[in-house]
Length: 92
Image 1 (spheres, helix red, strand yellow):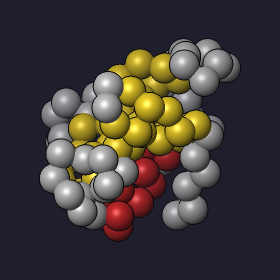
Image 2 (image 1 turned 60 degrees about the vertical axis):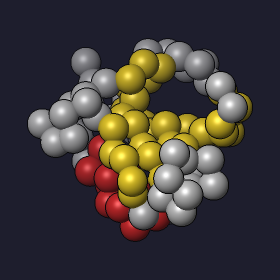
Image 3 (image 1 turned 90 degrees about the horizontal axis):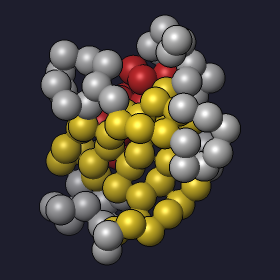
Image 4 (image 1 turned 180 degrees about the horizontal axis):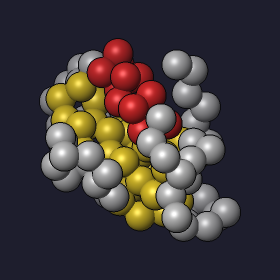
């Protein structure tokens, strides 16, 4: 899956990337160079609440991971997680 990042933003000593899918969900990813474990990324499911670049909130649409955050992930793990999020039914 090709992921188009719509924003790179610096928050609390780390950089993170945001993407938006057509279903109203997206991902916030802390790339491997800024993650808590070097070489591994962290990805959180977000729900877009508007059209602005900051109009989103964390959400947990899956039972696993139960908090909607994928930790200690390789690039291929993040890509598979992104596809899973992109395949969710549209938000209401």
